[in-house]
Length: 213
Image (cartoon, rainbow, N blue to C red):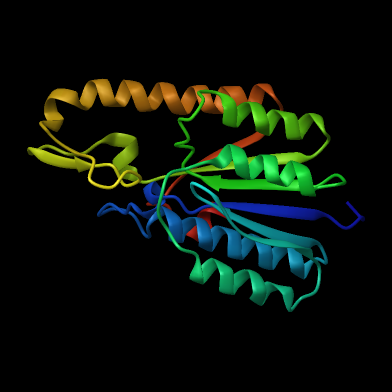
């Protein structure tokens, strides 16, 4: 606890993170950025080094870890200016961290976890980082609409990561199946991470950010 810690904050900026339902305090993207900013501030205040990697379909901005107090503003400017859109490739982001993190570090992934490229691959890469003696924590950030599916009327559902992909559906006829699917997905994701000694915390954006911290 007396040694300096190096932390890599990995922030998902894919299209699905732009979603904000009526009950959320912020969009998932803005909520994740606020969490990252607060964590960066706290870590820098105690003399630890903090870096940032944004990612969507491709890797975005990478800021190497620094421990200087004024380094916070480099991180904050990137968090404010980050573009949102495209599909998710969280696996590539964690693989990039594995390349640049030469010694024991804390890796924090802030994402909704909706990376369906290879089922189980995201959790597997997180476990690989843990086996390399890095500490890894995943914050799965979800909107309350995604958790309890409150829709009742005939609704047009739009894929926020694939432009033009829409479907008209009666949510009352699909609610039970949806809740089963999202529950199984989140439970499996959490179980796969914790089996590899990776920290997991589900965050719902109706919860004030200060309470989450």
